[in-house]
Length: 188
Image (cartoon, rainbow, N blue to C red; front, top):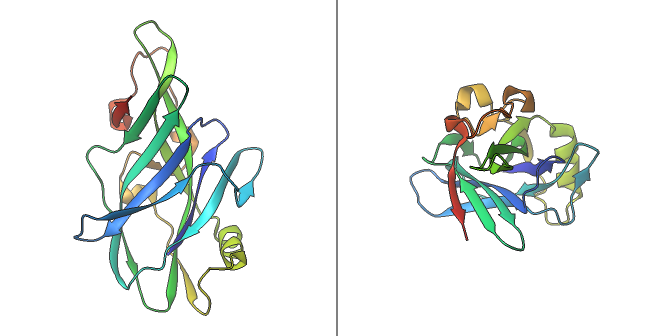
């Protein structure tokens, strides 16, 4: 299974991640991009291609993670409740789920200042680029057929997974983030 995870240049996350698990299990794994050594980079975004050698079976994407670390505060946003975007891994195949780019959401605090309010992923099909990058990785799987199964945000029906960044506009007059995009926030 492989995909790419990255961030739009407008995102200020220390890292962003997609969390997955075997269906019916509670142990999770994640694909996390923290900005080091990107596999791709342009004026709009940067990210990396990730892959996992998984046993054949049913799996699901179940959560997102957006994290900001600064000198004075750390914040983590995750989905509440968890969601399920299923996919199946078959023997001899590498399934491609798409490119997931993180975009920020902002709100306003009680003083009217703009503050981070979480994020969401925009999914797109960058199969040619990502499969080429995957093949260039030394530890990448060889001799497997690649299956394109890009997540469809319309079918997934998860507010944190979108087709394009223009679907959500921050409302600068609002003092809160839209409820559909509010996720749990842990601040230290």
